[in-house]
Image 1 (cartoon, rainbow, N blue to C red):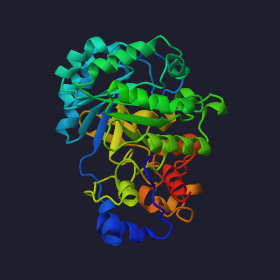
Image 2: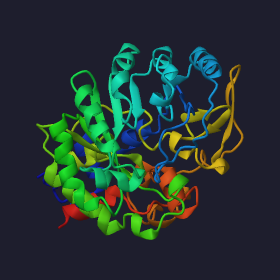
Image 3: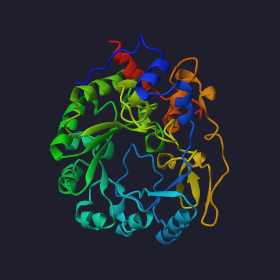
Image 4: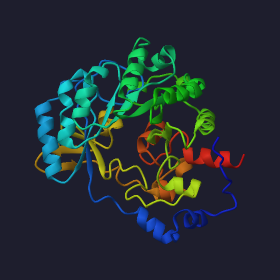
Length: 374
């Protein structure tokens, strides 16, 4: 089990100096640097063969692939970094060659009908697969998907993909799969996954009307972290990553790794906060959102896309949030980290509080600090 060393006796400025070798003023100046190259994620809505109750995507189908191809070429000409996010590539295999056009090497899939397409996906330059699997057995997985029969197909896809791809298992955590997490992580190791990304079920998108009993409480979130710390082994895969939907998160990478693990690392540009709505945007048709996970909500459209000019923002309430504006547990008076993380994932905060400057339901940073003091 990973051991957490108490930080209570050391000030944040002292930990910054120890972890990064920088004076705090230099540290914050480095964090303030924005990436000079904005990124566009083209969410290609070709439809999906499942209607999972946790889905955050707007799924209508009927994407015009010729128009998407034109937009990708335009985005690269305009200097944007480009990523792709088809709702499900196996529904429309013609999306796969677009990965080579976009220079994208990461493909996300539910894994149900992906196995026959692995050769084609590899030929398009994809080298990392994100595969959805939400539990260690058919019954647990189907709590979110409603289809226990999918489990064996997904496991077979993962088994056939390992060795050719880095396989990331994407798992949405909720109260009904919480007790199966340890078995799930051991299954991921057995299957040869390189990473398990744990996501938090959010009350938005398809999950808007789910009962309160489905959502993790702060105590549940702490149990998840305890399970991960007990399982994690730096010398053996899979790596465990907490997705942005856990709120402020620097445990698995970036700034918080320095502060927790005292590990020297290169300063990452733009890693101060989630870049969504700042240097990272998602395009569905011509609508611009901050993030692929925001597209289920029409009221979260922040602009329009033009193949001639790129992104034109019409809504700035997400761009103006900074640490001084945060309320709740992330407010500067309530958290010494707010200047670093800026409150983390804004979608997580929005789903919990319906405020752009609100706080998420819990904070991974605080959980780790609390565990250190026990």
